[in-house]
Each structure stands twice: as structure tokens, then as C-alpha cells.
Image (spheres, rainbow, N blue to C red):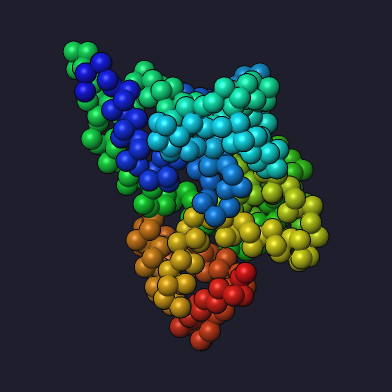
Length: 340
């Protein structure tokens, strides 16, 4: 790939990706271009029109942002209506800023609309130029470029397995709610959360248990990791808009239950287990643990068993799942009509 056509080759390679792989690619490019406190591809079933979400982190500025990406052929120009839809999704989901990324280009009206809104437009040419500038997806030798085969292979594989950080640790929703309330009332650091929970609830959580339940809240999209306000590098959590809504709802109320069910379904690993249960009709405890081991990376055998217990507790809260059989041989039976 010579300098005469590196962008064209990159755009052709992007078009070979499936939609989810293209989302992951855009996330990787964003991570290289921006300073973020958090950045994640949103679950496919609950993205609300937002494919990637994150939080910008600068010395004098911080803001949540949402990104929509479309893998379009060069002739399929993004129109004004698409920009308006993104603007609506940003408002609905509580994002301050937005970016639209496409492999194609934008119409004149779309560009003019974006200029009036907190929305940045990134074309296929822009995306390829960014990758060339930062060396993502390409190798350069004596001024000539080639596609980096390892990068593109890793990109494909990165969407196949769930990292350990996105697998639940805590399975007690009372404690998860207590941690969320503490996050709202404190600076969100581990020690402040632990102390608030001890003073205001019946729980006495160790720092390890604070972390495990804050992790679960983060996986559910109810909390997010944020930079420490003091700049000391301490782990700190903040509520998402959904997390704030969940905490405001009365415990065990219908709104709280629906928010929690929606959050559970939004977790990628839960999506995969539900898909397997729907196909097979039911899954045993051992089959769920086997699926967890196959679909994740970075977990030991003992970790799979512990986190499998948390995952199964989450599944039991979904109406489409009925648990049958004795405790030592539970079966998780799927009924799609109950979840509709």
C-alpha cells in the first residue's frame, strides 16, 4: 500500500468489518485521539442509538459523550435526518456531546445542522487520516504503507470474548443499591463508600466487597469509574443517569425492578447467555459456567465459578428465566413470551 492510496485501502478494509467490529475499531481510534475517563461500546440490544459512550477528562473540562457509527459504502451519503436522530439520542440518554462516524461522507445540510449542535462529524476520509497519522492498523516502511495484519486480526478477536472487567462480581442487589446510594452521597472513593454504607445501612462492607459491588454496578451501566478529584489516582465511581434514576426509585417498586431488568439485559455476557438459553430451551448451572469460561478472557477456573454464581443470580431476576430443579442441579428454563 503506497502513499498514493493508503486511505482508500483503509476504507476498503473497514467495509469488510461487520457492524460490531467497526464499532470496536472506532472505539480504538477514539481512545488514541482523546483523553477519556471511560470509553465503551454499548450493548447492542440497549444502545438507544448510541454505539459508543465515554467521558472526556481534561483539566478544566469533563463531559459525557455519545458516538453513533455507520459502516456505509462511499456513495451512501449521511443525510440531515441522521444527524437530527443522533441529536435526539444524545438528549434522551443524557450526553452533553456527540460524534457521528461513517465510512462514507455527509451531505451539506447534515454538516450545517451539526455546526449548530454539539455534534462532530467524522467521515471515512477523516477516520482513515487519523489512523495513518497515529499508525493504527497500518505499518510504514520507507514512506510506503501496508495493512497491519496483526491489528486487524486482534480487532476481529476483540469482539468475540468478554474481558474479566465486564463479568459481574457481586450478586447481592441490596448491597449494590447501598453502594450506589453511597456513590451519590460521597466523593465516590472506595473508603468513603465503605464508611457511608456502614453509617447509613445495615451492611458492613470490606473494601474488597465495596469494589465487587461497585464493579457489578458498573457492568450494569448504573455506575462508571471516574478520575479522582484530588488527582491522587484513587479509584472513584460516579452514577450514570440510569443509576441515578434507579437510586431515586423506591426499592422493590415496579420502576426500580424494570430499570434493573433492563440493566441486566444490557450486559453483553447476559445477552450471550440468554441467546444460548433461547436456542437450547434451558441451560444447567454447569452449562452456564462452561459458556462463561468460553466467552470470557482473563478468568481462572475458580473465578469462573464465583462469577458464574453472580451471573446466575442476575438471570433469576429476569421474567423470561424460570429456575427449576434442586439447588445442586438447577436448570434455567427460557420462555421468551414472559420477557416480552
